[in-house]
Length: 85
Image (cartoon, rainbow, N blue to C red; front, side, top):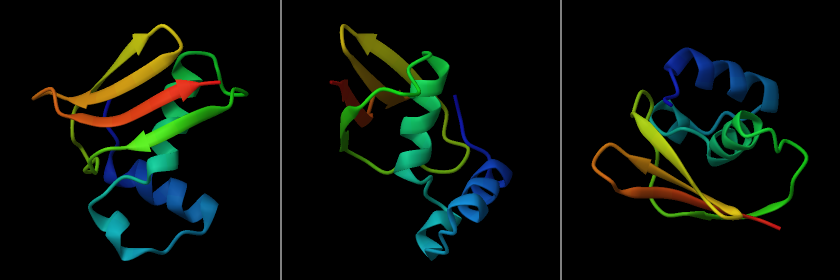
């Protein structure tokens, strides 16, 4: 999984977010929504821990662990942890 500059720009337009940090960093909620959508859990509530920024075009892997998801980059650095409640 990765987020292109175009995809981030579209998302930012929809949510009306003009924070300049998103020129390089993917919005955290965008990541959460993508993971939940990919696993068919769009309507679930979860606790989220943002560990490290996710950069535009950074390759990511999602690991499901029981009732949680961990998003890591290719080097194994944990970027986001999500616990579905």
